[in-house]
Image 1 (cartoon, rainbow, N blue to C red):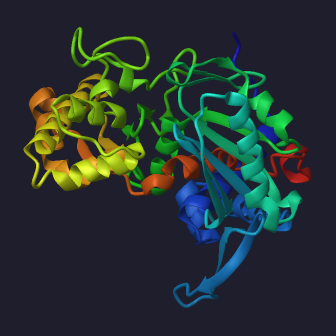
Image 2 (image 1 turned 180 degrees about the horizontal axis):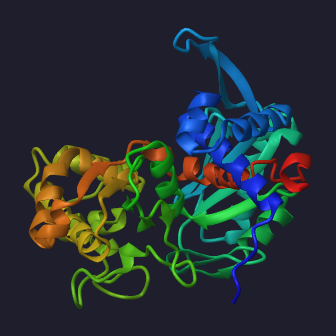
Length: 405
């Protein structure tokens, strides 16, 4: 196949995207700094930033001195240009958050529910979006991102396969549209991947190019990032780390298989193993149960043993990531991953070292996620932001500067 010819329009869009992305991630910056960091000529930087300012995407943000010359004007992405919404569909409820383009949270709501009924989930997403967007003009919402458990089949409309929820080919995007979210771009992605993008943009993965972001909560998954991009595989199912086998013929997993990592380090698996050693579990939700178990470890031999075993299983699972992907950094996140990491980080790292090949392990650092329980929702909100940065224009309508050669 002959190479695609690059047009003037392509080059203009690329330059806009390069400069807008640089300002989003590194700004505020002067035009001189933008030229030095991107390699674009001073004339190109001046022309393109002028267009971005005219379009309202970029605003001035003060000035700095310049070696005896005139002060240099600083530029930044305009946080008031619009808003984005991130939705975290978890296994016990959903969280919906509204952000400006500076990624400052403006509003948030949470609703507990069982995700077994995808129709109810779609309606709750639509209601949550309406709630958080109630205080801003409808025209300011640039897009909605949704992070979900399971595999997301991308196409004309996103379809979700989540066996642990009983979802098989659920047309979630169509259902959310029918429930009332229309007129704005809608992006649906696996929750581990949205968490991975959030940690890469704003958290513990920032500055690295080869990273695995591991999510441990009710479920277990991972986002594999190579050369700065999330690896999705042939059908977008890459990253189902929780359903790799850690014990042949081991514990039954919700996915229908046995011996899966999730059956040992996922919240349900941890609590079930605690009950199996004859210890009483006081009920309540999984998060409060895991927190109580960690608190009890100081006085309960059974709790301490289960959690020490969990740290070992988790370290062995992380070692598989080290050996398979040779990342420069592994980020452990998810509410259960953070809770375990805060108490058993050294034990997890020690188990990773024992089960890893020496050379790739020595090239890898392990860190806890920095974005806390909001990571999936923040990452979901980055999906419409990524579309904006790629196009360097409002994703809902054509831009005279970006799209007309």
